[in-house]
Amino acid sequence: MSGSRGMRLITGNANRPLADAISSHLGIVPVKADVRRFSDDEVFVEVQENVRGEDMFVIQSTSAPANDNLMELLICIDALRRASARRITAVIPYFGYARQDRKVGPRTPISAKLVANLITEAGANRVLTVDLHAGQIQGFFDIPTDNLFAQPVIVKDILEHLGGKEPMVVSPDVGGVVRARSLARRLNTDLAIVDKRRERAGVSEVMNIIGEVQGRPCILIDDIVDSGGTLCNAAEALLNNGATEVYAYCTHGVLSGKAVERIQNSRLKSMVVTDTIAVTPAQSACANIRIISIAPLLGEAMRRINNEASVSSLFD
Image 1 (cartoon, one colour):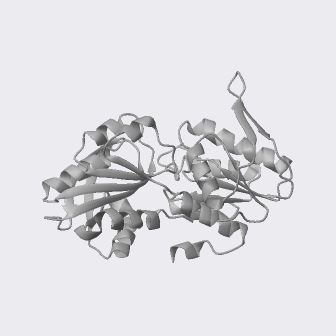
Image 2: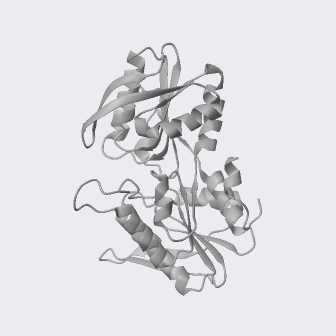
Image 3: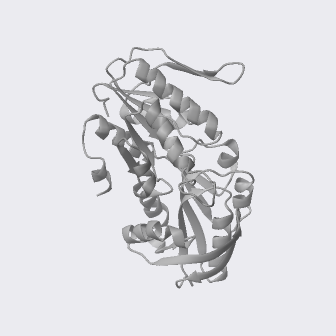
């Protein structure tokens, strides 16, 4: 695929392999830039090519270390704005702070809104992201925001690996039912729900299964896997209720703490995550974690933005 006129890419340090894959898909060489730290850990960015009048795309997930990667994104945007870029699109495959999208108690912040304000004030003209934890976060931005869905990539992988098994789609909690129903409709299969009670933050207890999973392979679908506890407990409950095998598909593999070890020791047949967050050596070494790339989907969306074409038609 040839590059588009006036379209240039720049990347921070959060997920260079993904940025390279997007560049390769688009046939565009990224703009040379120095994104580094001073001795006191301040972020410094120097764009080493002329970008005046260009349509710039800054590729940077705000995954761990979230604050460092967020500052890199903001300073890259500021550097491009001061270099007279025509338009700056913040491409944020994983939008950190998305789970802080509402007040959960008195005197608590809505950090997702604060981050949206920071990105806008830094000088971004639009935002491109993947599977926001809550769709309403698009409304936190006062600039155009495109929220892509990883489901086409996930559906393709399911059909390639599980096509003949007639799997059942399972939502790991009530909050994910809309996502699971959408996947079940695409696969033309049945839907089940795991009803769980969370006693305290970070600890989940599976209660029961809504739906008949006896004798069926099951696919758990979620947007974020963090500690892995919810999915591992859900897999245990499904197998105890007669499911033959359990697979998990998640867009964002946060996988903090001992999550990889937990998944490796779980009864999950496999967990598939996209590369919106850089893959760690521990994840690569884990036998039942598999990575699929979101680069072609992001690259095509970026090309359409550059050409002023429809992005939503990617999902028709």
